[in-house]
Image (cartoon, rainbow over the protein chains, first blue to last red):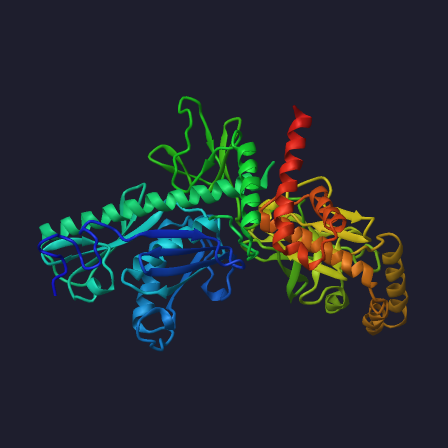
Length: 242
Length: 331
């Protein structure tokens, strides 16, 4: 299949190779949670809820000088085209849970909340490629909403290489083409990479281009997330009054 | 449209939506002068020639002061800190809090108080029902359940942090202790301001209102702290002399008195008003809550309709009026 039109240079869904899908973030979608957020990247839709910092449930896991971060990733049965039953804790979701946990742990200032636990729950409501990135972005928004101290905003975006062109933010069709898929997570302010995944081989010079593209995407998302948080914080402050 | 209906899902009609938005816009215009809102990873501007102290909610990056939270930058002399919203409760010594017993451990109760850990109320840091100052014996320890059980709601005061980092409470006065015949609300802790008075008796309604600093709010039937409680103590004291095991029965008899329907309605009305205000994100003080209750009565709003669209919008508009008159009085 031709993923980039050789004549117009457009992709299958009409984007240019360096275009991102439309992103949207909303804060406070789960009333009972300490922090929550919904994040959409095109048709990919993810919900995140944060509980904590709270008392550690399993005392044997308690850490005396920092908070324990836990993460659970799941996909709703209705999130994909075929309604498949997804057993909890299969290989894929365990791996993504781990990835999200490690990424978020890198930015949370865990030493400020000793002997407590932070639970991150992310669920994919609609899957259209890039769920990993969407989950990380949603988790960042939700953590900021929960008032958990972080050293920086983590954002994530994917990029791929199909039809000899680096493509930003792959959707499901492009993702399942089997080409290389680079997921990058960065700390926006410090300009540090906290996550880098690729399940294929790429020549070094091309890889650098693809990764650079993904980093550009991450920065654009960070800009957007900052705007959402600023608006939300302003609203809360105005409403509270003096 | 971002009206942020976090706790209430309302369907507003066109007019209500417009009214709400203009009210919120006016609130925004009024507040816009004062506060410096910041977001995670924003640089907090400071004058580097002065020596500064980095407070809560800030971190250091290459010599710059960076916010670690979303909130408002506050400056007190040299100190720069970020005051966050919607975070969990941060205890300070002397705060009056409301909590729920979740566990009874040797010589102590564990309470959920919306903090990052459970709080501890030691048997030795509360007054015994018989009111006598003495060493707590093993018998007292066995009778702990007759004082507080699991799931009881309790009012207490923050005593301080122990050196192992756990939070200790105390309840050494008649006004602290078990709360009964009422309901517990949970609101974000930043909406409750620390004030001189956290216990309120709304005389018109026969209702007690306790605004816990941790965002737990108690609305219940008024208990006369001198009269009735003493009676209960007396009764228990007598029971103590006769037979320790009958203490439970004695309190049960006292409990048999039912709360009149009128009072129960008042409790619900006050509770719903507080819920509404927290859903709107307005800070909770007795004055505002009482205002809302009175407005709901004078506009003949049903108790359940306090949480409906029309009264929601009206309350937002009333808050605008209140803040306008406040600023006028100042100016």
